[in-house]
Length: 90
Length: 156
Image (cartoon, rainbow over all chains, first blue to last red):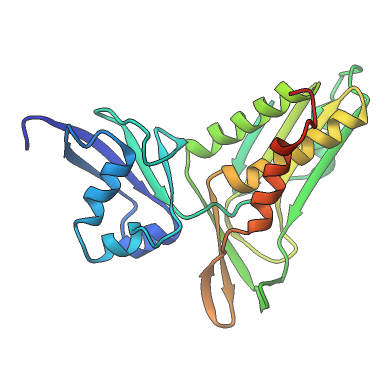
């Protein structure tokens, strides 16, 4: 546990979920990581499959609190960030 | 407005009848039905799996219909999208729009399916003779959505 941390819920879908072999996770991140993009970078730094699934080379879409988001979208304690490939419904 | 995300199939005639039920303000109903093809990107498809983001999916579809209602005179609209395992010939998606006149209904229906294709969190995974693969997003779908911003279609 860290003193100045925010609890952030993570969701992963489709090929991102398969690469990570993980559908969801809740993490504590330092308060200064206050955007969707900074959390993405934080996860990439875990290395291995994280760098593969979330790296810059990958066409990736992000959502914050279930709305489409971009790297600059501001986040807050208790928020939910989702990472997924471009959508292919319809 | 009715939004449904479901694994069960649906009956087109029944859904259209329900949309128009007892509403004499409606003079036109346009529907789009999307179905599973047996061929995609040069490979035969025996089955597909549709994944989605429960919670966000419904909100995204509702937001798309609200945008359509802001641009055209829509009396009522219905979106049904199936998830889970599907086979060639299966129905995947239904968009139906009811309005007083056909122009609004045609435009709003096309707008909703164009936005759904690029904004609603669904993903298709196909089974092909070479194994399972995630379907790639199409540039043509982005082009179809962007045309609604490039000109003055609708009242926006």
